[in-house]
Length: 275
Ligand SMILES: [Zn+2]
Ligand SMILES: [Zn+2]
Image 1 (cartoon, rainbow, N blue to C red):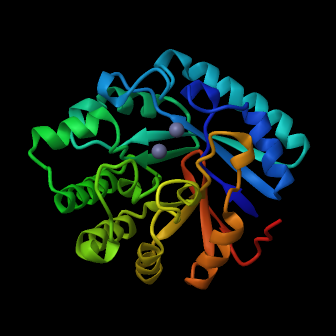
Image 2: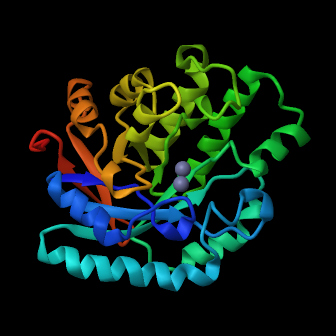
């Protein structure tokens, strides 16, 4: 079964299309399961608010929207799950409210992402005197590693997104092999997953997240993958899967993973038919 486990709704303030429209787009591309993953509400202003994420009071509406879409999509053969794109952040005190919310809301799937472009992370880097590109990149991957070890997340979203949005001038994974392999080893050890995020082919330096070299290392080390288009409009559902899925197969990945009620399931890549 073809799956796509990262997409947003208008509640984020920067996405268009209702979950049902994403489900219809999935059906048209032969995708049998999608997971909506809006940005998690955060109470600290520098994480960004209006135009970036829903407010905590809108969560009930989010669940209702996705449930309605799930009921409708069942009639045309697409399973719709409700997830959330949560934040990874080095200062745990800024995640307390998010933890309360994650503990009580019945999500199927929780992505952990470090959005370095947000004021929150830029402030952290400045306050901690991390200014050189190489140090920023290594710090970013160390924070992802800590995120993995926290046990909060089912997968780590767009793991090398540090390469876009201008935080660093350029990013060569081969120059940071040790710190990236530490991150991958932590993913394996914690029995977490890593996301292959195909939106990278539509922006920034136009390759998949993470970089194909990181995927080679991940394949060697036995990292489990989830896959997501990071769609912010229905037309993007399954974007670039026709390129990326054959590449994953060539690299030796045999299955992709998805979640229902925080339980992991796998689906064979070999049986996946791209339309
Ligand atoms: Zn977004
Ligand atoms: Zn993200």
